[in-house]
Structures are given as C-alpha cells and as structure tokens.
View 1 (cartoon, rainbow, N blue to C red):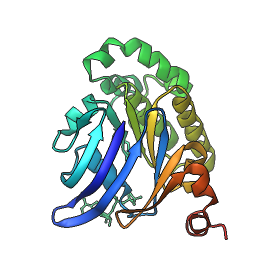
View 2: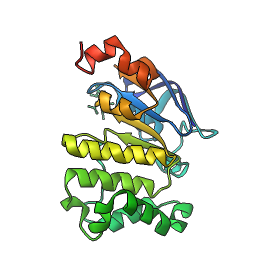
View 3: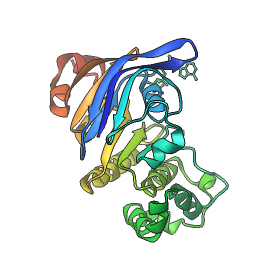
View 4: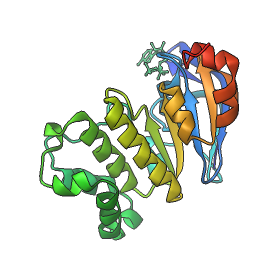
Length: 235
Ligand code: ATP
C-alpha cells in the first residue's frame, strides 16, 4: 500500500532523512520507532507532502506521491494525526469531526462515520457540543483520531499518539488503535513508546539520525538484544 524507497528529505539545505526505505502492506500496523530527533516526524511530513522530497520515491496505492500537494495526498487516502493534533480549539467536538469529512465520499458517509466514531469514543458523543480546546489531553487525542477517521483513510498515520498522556490514558488510546486495526484500517504508528507500539504492530522500523538501523517483525524487534538495551531499558 505504501512503499518508500531511498527517501532523502529535510529542511532547506539541511538533510535529515538519508536513503530511508520502508513499506506498509494492506491491513498491517507498522511502527516507526526512534528516540527524540531521530527523524520520525520528518518522515511523516515528507510522505504527507508537507516538506519537499529531495530524492527517492513514495509509492502509495498505485500512485507516486512525490510532488503532490498535501491536500491531494489526504484525498488519496493517506491521513495523518499530527503529534500536536491540530484541532480547531474554538470549534465543538462535532464541528471538528465534521471538518474531517472533506472528500465527497466521506461527506456522503458522514452520518455512518460519525456513528462509528461515537461507538469507538463514547466520550466524544457525551461531549459533542464541548469546545475542543477545553477538553483534556487524552480526549483531544481521541478527537484528533476520530477526525482523521472521518476522512475514511486508507492509511491512518499516527504521530506519537501517547505523547503527554498518563499511562492509563496511553493504554486506552492503544486499546482503541487496536480496535481500529481489527476493523481493517491499515496503520502507520510512529512512537517513542517502543514496547507498547510493538505490542500492537505487525512490523517495525527503528530510525536513528534519519536512517533505518533495524527492521523486522514486532516479535523479532521485541526479542532483539540491542533494542532491548537501548530502547526498552532491559539488559
Ligand atoms: P520527536 O520525537 O522529537 O518529534 P522525531 O524523530 O520526530 O523526534 P524530527 O522531528 O523528525 O524527529 O526531527 C529530526 C531532526 O530534524 C532533528 O534534528 C530536528 O532538530 C530537525 N528539525 C525538525 N524540524 C525542523 C525544522 N522545521 N527546521 C529545521 N530542522 C528541523
């Protein structure tokens, strides 16, 4: 579904990603792991059309996305929940969810998709008229995921959904991601929370300094001694 080959990208003259390659197949959850500053968010920005691709190829759903606009890429079905969530804080929960439905097809299915979001996140149904900016961090994360689902993504991209959340809320958010996975949505999950991400993912890629340094099935990575020592704090 998504195949990134030898991607090079960065900011201005600054090269951050170096020949980065990874793939996500239909129905999979793939995790991109790495510490602060490894280049995870930059990778997502490049595949979402938010920063230019210097070289390499981004294949998605039988198309090449290099040089396509961010709007085109969302309409093609690659929908991202950014790390800072980018909610419309002066708009209600319902209005935020409705804003997610920006393709014609998603608008036609608005009622059905809204019911799906409310089933997944009952708190959003309870808080339908509340302004997004007044919700707690965990509720805002749920709203951001809900809004992305309203666009009917072929590939849902989550950038550190657990950031800033308590362990309890993190567990709730991961449980919901697992449910979304079981409903057949393909997911690219970017996380620093290696252990929890690999409990959920089928496969993972570890990025350091803009390069893939390790990849494998979730089980292989969980059992890897180097990864255990450097990321999981287990020796
Ligand atoms: P984090 O978990 O902190 O978001 P990350 O793995 O997502 O980490 P990136 O945000 O992709 O890392 O950052 C990779 C590198 O790119 C870092 O060295 C960072 O300082 C640099 N960088 C990020 N955004 C910009 C920018 N707008 N301009 C210049 N350099 C940037």
